[in-house]
Each structure stands twice: as C-alpha cells, then as structure tokens.
Length: 43
Image (cartoon, rainbow, N blue to C red):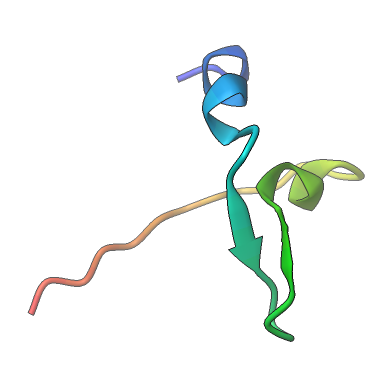
C-alpha cells in the first residue's frame, strides 16, 4: 500500500512513546524514513 493511500487513514492516529506521551504517528517519520510494523499476539 502506498503512502498516499495511507495518509488519510493515519492523519488522526496517536501513539505513545517510551515515556507514555501521546504523539501523532506521522511525526515519527517527519525527519527520516521509518519501518513501521505491527505484531498481533494470539494466545
């Protein structure tokens, strides 16, 4: 999936950093590329 397709979906997504602070997910790659992966645990 291309970034252009994801951008509208990610516009309002918030994540927490290691300090528990909330930030916009897009800010993670504002200065440099990022590899974003999601892992789901079943069990």
